[in-house]
Amino acid sequence: MSEWLFWEIKKMISLIKKNLAIVLLIIIAFASYMLTIIPSGSQYCFGGTCGLYFWGAHGHDAIWHLAIVAISFNHFPFVAPTFSGEILSSYNYFLDVLIYFLTKLGISATASYFKILPIVWFGLFSYLLLKLSEKIHKEKVFAFIFLFFVFFSGSFSFVITWIHDKTIWGSSGLLAMQSLLSLTNLQYAFSLVIITLILVVIKSPKPSLKNIIMLGFLVAINLALKFYAGIISGFIVLLYFALTFYKSKDILGFIKSLLFVGGFSLIVIFFFYGIGGQTNGGLPLVYSPFSTVYPIIEEPKLLYMKNITNAKYFLENSGRFSPRLVVINMFVLGLYIVFNFGTRMIGLIYLLNQALKRKIMQFDIIVFLTVVFSLVLSIFFIQRGVWWNTVQFSYYAFFLSNIFAAETIYLLIKKNKTIGAIITSVILLLTVPTSLDIIRTFGQPPGHVYLPKDEIVALDFLKKQPYGVVFSPLPTDKNRPSVRPLPIYSLGDSSYITAFSNKQSFIADEVQLQLVGIDYRERADMSRNWNCDVIRKANYLYELKQNPIGNKLNSCRRKFKKIYKNNLVTVYITN
Image 1: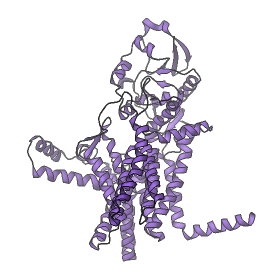
Image 2 (image 1 turned 90 degrees about the vertical axis):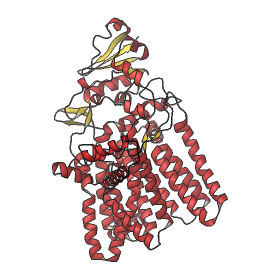
Image 3 (image 1 turned 135 degrees about the horizontal axis):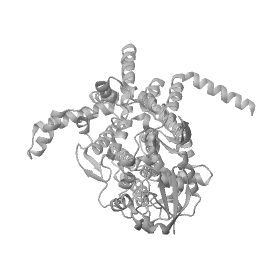
Image 4 (image 1 turned 60 degrees about the vertical axis):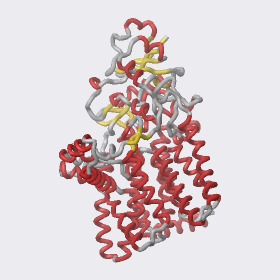
């Protein structure tokens, strides 16, 4: 046994020596990515302010998933965590189910979400990226470039902050989410693992029955993980089947393959998206061209262009076809694409080179058309509920375009090592400013928001009480503090009471209610203008010192009694 271990260690050391640059890159990437998630969900004290801290989007998005894990799966049908009396539907909760099962093994949801799953993700993702890289080119230089772009590619948003403030800091939040922020959306991060595995599979010249079944299964998993990922995965696989079976004229094989994929997908759609409750009707996507594009010249913090914006609206309202409007739209679209894709735009050189030489491969066609498809969805459609959410389709376009960017650099280096090395150095330097800003942002304590220590204690007390619905008035702008770090209650649209009390909320987290299509407006008005009617709809009242119940419930105070109080929170139980 000891001899075997000796030779295995020696083999590993030899492997690292041969691939030292790649190993170092992976280590740096691991540290950078873990910085964006592992510190969140832990207790700290900063300047005497103690509590559970969260950085970036984790202060809202991660807590929503913790709320689902805490309450939804304890009932069937699964219940909406922040809207009592409603079921959870039209939502991709697959990863939440996995975290829920881990809690049954004694692993806390916060440990799974912020510590364990990110490490598992990075290991799987890195391994599959290396497998994909090897299938494209076996040379180590390509693997290094490809991994670099996937891990650290960013937008040109730093150009905008440099124009406005002569700094690159603060640039990472201006445009669409970039590579290093992947773990701020854990579902998206895992969907990239599935898409990478799909790309590895479709590098095969002809699909076997095993691969067809696997592809159908992978598309279904991505649908369950993330709606956007399911659409993009399905498109990739559909193109692969269409192009492959077209060459062999095997129409029957094409139909059978579609049935496999469609069958798996329909099952997922039925269970995750098809069992609806009190949801708004209509398709999730609404045709609204350029709605996500024009903010780049309309927002003062971005490339504000007043004259072009005014001309655009004037020409649109004229009701006539205008060549000038077409030119304006193309100009703005160009800005949007170039600034969001950043140095990935160099991938066009590889595509043009392959097209001119008529050497473009089926794999390249599939990836390129998927990039275009992803962009079309994000540019021409908005989402019902939270309109700008279709920008998430573009995340997959960014990811896939890394392949062509790496191919271009590899092509340049092969043609002339010296010139290629110089051009590569410049491009790589222009690639990382957004990632540097992300590292700086997440590396600076304290976090954006925190759950105060007194609330942790109060919520832990509430968790031990019998199951019931909790009512806490939605905050108004006038009682929201402006100091940083922000206590979570000040956000107004948080699921934290449910997440940390294991109790369903009467109403909370309006943004997520919009996303799942629940018509919450009447109840939101009731929550902000509460009266004694609320007592009949909730089992517990959760009162914050900063958002007191006041005199509105004086006439029915006999119907509830105080069961807990500290410096920040008072908890009542209703009779």
